[in-house]
Length: 253
Image 1 (cartoon, rainbow, N blue to C red):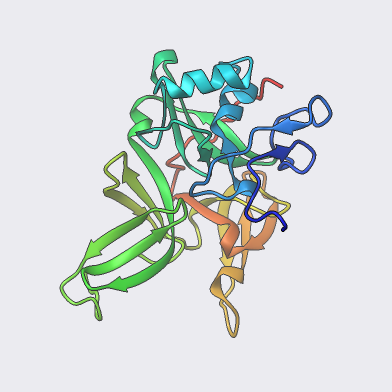
Image 2 (image 1 turned 60 degrees about the vertical axis):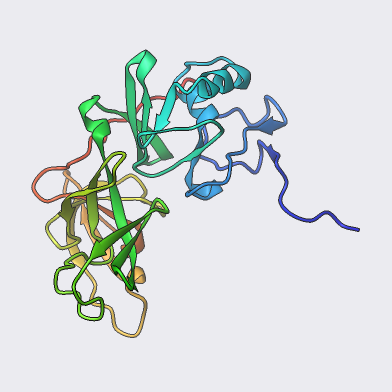
């Protein structure tokens, strides 16, 4: 009888290209645990500690660091190879180091932040669902937020739209601010060949007879260069100035 289910192992060659690992040094690499981000859009926690930050020399040392409850993701202690993804906040209190996962031209990178910035993260609204208690916002990191309204069929109190970015507190996940997706706002491209490009949204295509997430968007960087992508790859950062730091950390490898 054939094998059923997924394997718990991952070879280095088919691993995501943006992972900072040597492809021919060893056969196997860390496989992230099941979590809110898929394999192609995440970094395993052990790989972050060993290959990017250099806090551990081996996976065993990284696992010891994790099992001692010294590493937090979005304000919660993680005990395995948790898959950290876009805009997740990593806190290593013992080393007084704090990072936010951001998109870069490589794929995903870490941006150093202050301890105060670990108190919030940015989540994009992917979908909205009507529930008996009100309106449920489905966020890009797999979490949901419930917005209580008087009439769920006519939610006048709920003003959040799909693709808006919410600034939420950690770990309570309370909404502090909303950055709407509109022309003139600052944004970063999170996918495609122009991933990591930051700039101002110049134009958003009006969709007719196609899904809104596939609408074309033009982003202009600080040098005046224009890049075209789809709405699904656009993540708002703020209106007049970015709310999140975008400075990258170089990998140890």
